Length: 205
Image 1 (cartoon, rainbow, N blue to C red):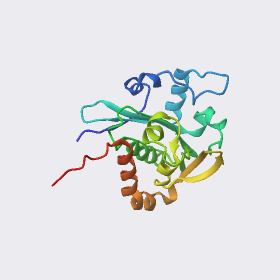
Image 2 (image 1 turned 135 degrees about the vertical axis):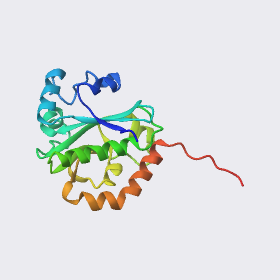
Image 3 (image 1 turned 30 degrees about the vertical axis):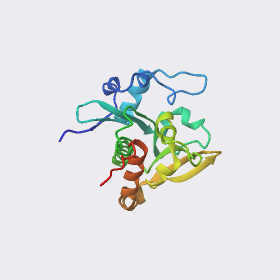
Image 4 (image 1 turned 60 degrees about the vertical axis):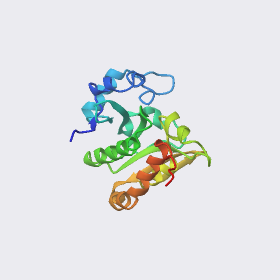
């Protein structure tokens, strides 16, 4: 069986959607633009791969996620509900190429959790948004690349750190990860499947 997830590095970045190649929004402060090449040198020197890429069975990229130590992303310290914690790995964004692949976002989060634990981080953090009831799945999972639905993250065990309006900084403590992930895995899978899979066609018997 082929490996579907690879680390995001200077080399594999070229396989992600073109909009990701030069984007430095998270790496920059307001009014200042970071140099991506220098940022990559720092990220890979301090942390190694700074995200993950998900491939389908044909080797095509269907999604990618960026993450790393919070201090690598100055923008996060300016956002509502920030700043992130210095002991956490921060998930900053995810780009889903194929919305018909229901496991991609879940798999990318699980990869980030595993990588952060392996690197000795105490927690994984990200920014969440409390969408109004009835918001479309397209809006919740496809439109926004840098913020994730709060209810989706709740099923991984993320807890609220700070709130500013509809935006939250949320945190997954690794000390309690195993029972949460195992106990809620089925629900997480169901939510992702509902978000990205078309409704089944009713059949008559």
